[in-house]
Each structure stands twice: as C-alpha cells, then as structure tokens.
Length: 412
Ligand code: HEM
Image 1 (cartoon, rainbow, N blue to C red):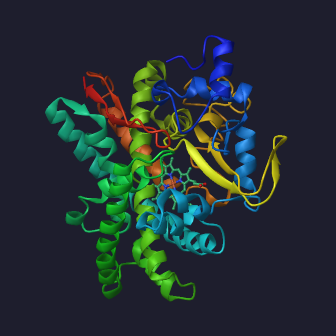
Image 2 (image 1 turned 30 degrees about the vertical axis):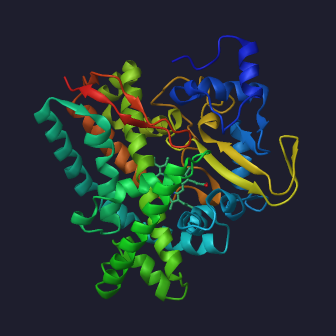
C-alpha cells in the first residue's frame, strides 16, 4: 500500500478538503497518504464543522499533557449528538470522557484494581486459552484470524478480570461493538438505536451482577469488580450509575481495541515477511514487536479534547469550546518522531507511540493489552510460522476503530 500520494497537488487538495464527516471510501483501507498530506499542508486542520484535526506528533503530545486547556469532558459535544438517552448517560459518565474530580476518583480505583498481581495471574489462563484456540485451528487446517483468535481472546480476558461467569459472556462483545460504534464521527439512526439498546441491556445485566458480587465478594487482589465495589464503600464513593457505567466502559475499552491489535498485527506480519522472519528467528523480540505493531496500525485512530479557553496550537488560534481530534494514527507516522515511519521495524527504538494516548488519561489497561498481544501474536506465529492469506480480508470500515472483520488464512 503506498503511504503517500504520488503527486503534491493532489496531496494538498486532499489535505485542504479533509472532512472527518465525509471521508472518501479509499481512506478506510489506507488513511496514511491523507495523514502525511495533512501533516505537510494543514497540520492544525480546521474542519468544515468548526473543529480541528491534529496530525503532528508534537501537537498531539501538547494536547495530552495540558489537561487544563484541553478537556476530556464530552457533555457539550454529546448532548446534541445523542439527545436525552442512555447513550448520553453512559458516554458522559465514563472516566475517559470526564475531567477531575470524577476522572481522578474512578481512575484511582481502577488503577488500584489492575494490580501487577491481577495482571500476572492472567498469563497462565491466557496462554492456555490461546493454545486451545490454536489447537482448534490446527484441526480445521485453516482459520479466520478475527473470529478464531483476535476476537476470542479479549472477551475472555476482560471476563476473567471482572469475574463475569463464563455462561454469561455471550452478549458482551456485541454490546461493546454497538456502544463504541455510536462514537463514529457520523451516526446512522440504526447505529444509534443499536447503541441505545446495548446500553439498556448491559445495565440490566450489570445491576444483577453487581448485586450478586456485593452479596458474594471476590478476592479484592484479583477481582476488579469487587475492588470497584469496595472503593465505592470505603471513603471514595462511586454512585451506582457511576459504578455501572464505568464497568461497562472497562468491558468495552478492552474488547475491540485489543481484537484489532491482534488482527492488525498478524495482518501486518503477512505484509512484511522480513519482519516476520526476524521475529521467528528471535521470539524474544515480541515485546518491541507488539509496540511497533501498535504504532504502525493503531487500533484506536482518534482521541478527542475540547478547549476550555481561547488557546493557540502551533500558532493556530482556537476559541473556547473548540472540538479537537487528536490524530493518533497520523502522529504515529510522523517522520519528525519516527524515522522512516511507514516501515514496520520490530526493533524500532525509541518507540514513544501514542497508541495508548498519553498523560492523565493514558490507557489504564495498557499492560493487559500488551500481554494479550504478546501471547496471542507470539504463540500463533510460533505454531503457524508460514500462515498466509487464502481469501480477501474484510476491513471494519470504521474511522476511529481501525481493524478487520475477517482475515481468512491458510496455516501451512
Ligand atoms: C490495544 C488495545 C488498547 C488500545 C489501543 C487502547 C487505547 C486507549 C487510549 C488511546 C486511551 C486514552 C483515551 C483518551 O486519552 O481520551 C485509553 C484509555 C483507557 N483504556 Fe485503553 N486501550 C486498549 C486496551 C485496553 C484494555 C485491555 C483495557 C482494560 C482492561 C483498557 C482500559 C482503558 C481505560 C479504563 C481507559 C481510560 C483511562 C482514563 O480515562 O483515565 N484499554 N485506551
């Protein structure tokens, strides 16, 4: 896939006309020429709806670091988008879309719950789960990497983290896709309805799960849900809706993003056979390889902030209340930070990518996601070193969450 437009006039035109609400069809397969064009010709790009899109690494970092000028609170943005609805209640109660004090309280409780012990405990069951999935693929002789591996791993990991009973995990993934789907730049009536329905069903399910966990608490060193409930009763109290919506958020945050890390990662290793060969020769490179895969095809392409006062970003004046999209995928291909940015280099060093964001809201589950990526990608590769496409992969067709719906492969 070419990472740049061949001709400068076209690149300039694309940059100046860039509109998040009207993305051209070819953007979804390969957004990188557009990102390079933006960085070159309109790095702090004014969108037709009055918002801004940032594509330079340094500008994105500036936004992440300054939480007083750039707020995560989305009430003003989501009110007109969602109207009075459960989707509005959900997305405006999640910690990720809040500033202090709600953000600080919830973040403290969650960070305290994702203990190194809880994460270390995940490794053995995760390895066992992945090996079981690989054995099932071996028996079939071929695989569909998303359904057979990438989507199957996160639902179990997050389910284990919150100790959701196995028999009740079935609907979690569909709820999660529907709720996060409602965050796309443009929302169809169908997407809105599916999202609304998913929040309603998820809440109804969690009310029962939380009541049950209150009655039968788990081990707080291992069970995040018990920890969140305890946090609620000891001092720092989360009101019931805060607790429920943030549990939904944790369940959602860890699904599609991690599925796409695994799917995008294994796809990139098909397209970059020399890097796959290096990783096969030196499996210990899986750590830096996962970082590079996160940079190269970031599963979450956008972050969002709103200005709390009149500010200037890279010399461009913005009024108070301006909506800004942080181009994570663009920043991660910025040659000013990453030499030869369109090359996959599994030993890239340094690699300060923004796939998990940065600053106060940096992904709270980043070490869980990394562990899942290392085990799923590393073990798949070791078992099926010669895997290759045996059909056309299908992309998800979404701008914010970049990934595939299916990647059919032959295993030998
Ligand atoms: C490859 C997988 C993942 C990616 C790319 C990813 C990406 C991100 C990004 C970019 C943010 C920052 C949002 C912002 O600044 O506005 C974030 C926040 C968050 N993520 Fe992840 N994430 C991943 C996996 C996970 C997992 C597995 C979990 C939980 C188990 C998780 C839980 C969270 C939470 C709780 C936040 C909110 C943090 C806050 O607002 O303080 N994420 N994630």
